[in-house]
Image (cartoon, rainbow, N blue to C red; front, side, top):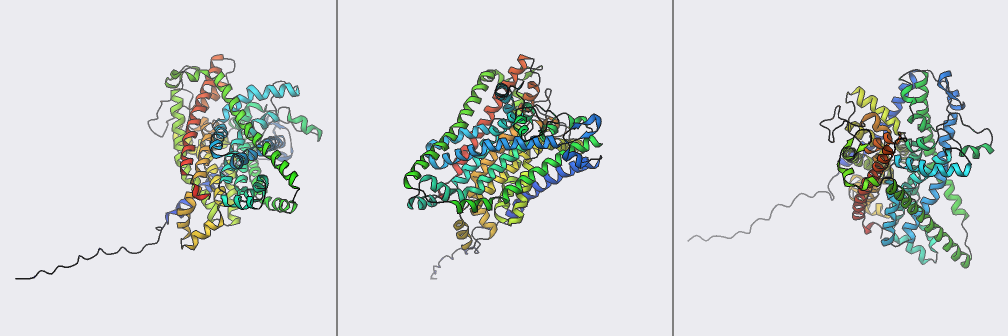
Length: 605
């Protein structure tokens, strides 16, 4: 009888050891694609403007030093427009930066999370208000105030434009700054409190030094939007050529009088009237190059001027008496909390105006019925077209902006990071009218697409990508050094470090940047007029890409607002504005919910 020998089953072969985490070679392709996109957009814009400049003769000294602009006599001076752009942006930053930074510090450092989150949501809802709606509110509220205070008929002025822009860029500064402050680990605060510092001193000495780069990114984003905004400024600035103060005292007087900026000149009818060649069109393109140069100069100055100011601030600190420290702490805390109330008051005021003027939006039939005639019916087709443009833009912009931001914050050297940051802010500060004209020439004409929803989404991508990139880079730069050192000490490669550490850490800030960018893109009007939309006649959903226009809420509002003599058109414009704000607010709420879900406490403990 044969004896059967039981054999131990052989163990399954052990898998070959593989690096942990797995190799991430795709990281570099993704990261560099985002950076190449930013460079490509800038090259396309410069190429478009360069071809226009080459098509005619420009007297550059006259363009930069002459105040008069008179195409009839072939006088093309842009100094007054350069002055108007500088004044409007300085007014906007002077009002928005102190309020935005103080509100961000109050949200992050003074209020408990349960109270800070809804207040932050109210601030971010201001970002959901499209620029065309800001222009309408500027006409209704800001212009009459300027007219009564300065005794100026109509109230069109540089000051009105600066105030409108200040309200527009404050949510951007607050949202990005809060992300930068929240990224500072709590142990730095605890160590500072253990030394007996007051809350104000903890913020100044322990929190702000680590969050300053991200907060500066918010200011640069605000500056980019202020320099590139056209429609809202167009409606309140007055568009008066040649207004330049002759003395220092005339500067204050010029604030309350109509003026002209580079963006309003480029967003007006003159780029179309100038044709495609000749001195007139070349001068218009020259103004575009001047605007890009101003954005680049402001970016370089802002990134290089920080070292000296920081060193002066650190050397100038001194210890105060305990009683003075306590009183100063209470005063500063009260001022920061008061600054936080201002955006909330502005939001309530805007919602009150929209609810009063756009009450037709509360009728469900207005949402679900099609437009009839010039100013009748509903806006169902415009809602569908707007959602299609926003979703497509977001899907394209998120990976590109995320990749560019990570390259800017992690891999690039200091010099390369400065260049890439300059390119990013210049693209973000480009007037959208230039993006629309370039898209019209390249996509709609040269490629034969005609008016196309995809062309409109592609044109909006450069509006969103810089916001995503800069917010992501600001979050990366605020990452504690010990986190990076711990990850690299475990043997992770640079690509593995980016995938396993940097991406999870930056994801909440990236979502914030995406929602801010999409909020701006949802309200863009100028580029869509040239590339994607028609006022009526387009189907709700396009049947293809070529010759497939859509209707959108921003262009619908802009067209209706031009017919101010028709009460039905005005009511329809305000109702459409209310619908657009509500849609953008819903998208914002969804993005905030996702951000709160992804934002883990492990990164801040």
